[in-house]
Image: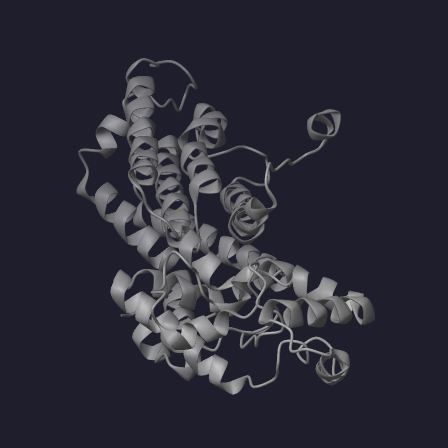
Length: 397
């Protein structure tokens, strides 16, 4: 009990370890990696807006954004959607992660957070800040609007762009995700309308009084708020679409596989499993040790010849297993430690009547001895190309 209380994780059964690692461990790593990249991007993008303004105010440190907007932007306006995504996002469904345990290798290879991803996000944040700053700047150039009447559209566009950027990076959409994004936008307009209607002498000579009310009556404000996020997010959207269609990763293929109907998905996994099992002809013992199969066979023959009367199948099997355990304990431990899901087969999902799949199960806890395992190693890539047309799984489909 003390060990359980002092540990970070505690599981009551070893059979829960498979889902803990392959599903929740993968999700945890994916969420943390995506949120770290998003936090860096969001703060760099919003701060860069203030940096570009310094070239037009003599580097005085002043801001074109109202101080209350600066306080509430990260605290209220843009915090809820990223928290919901960081807690509930699932890049690949649980049933696919269990059926294809090779997808867990992406976390071990740190594919979700690489140095080039960080710098790509920084470059993207720089580009988006330029678009969100200069499109409103040239829209209201040589006009009579004050600094807050120009800074409020910049803040609105930045909020739209940041939320839509998160929408592109979100893998799973639920009612909570939609509600958080809509609530953040409505909260911004509600606070802006109330604040601008109740502060007539906040920052003289330029004050935010009735600023949002005037802007919402100007068609140019709506046009700017629509065109700026589209231009800012177009490169990222095209990159995600083309990369997911032309050069999909293992996780993206697994995600597209989960969107297929259950019957087609089951048949596809069965077909992939049978094709791969036909390539593997090594016995179970030889898959772990080159000499294990021959030594075990010789031992079995010696024991069988030394027996005066023909032993029953159970006795012969017990002699074989006992001799193999005595001579090769390390190999047996390796076999026992092999993951059950490595055969790309899930007992509750795929039909049990398929004879080829029953042969691919391999090692059974009921004690079938040295049967054949015809499966992929956990570290190998999933053979999508053997039976799947990747063009059918592209994001454009």
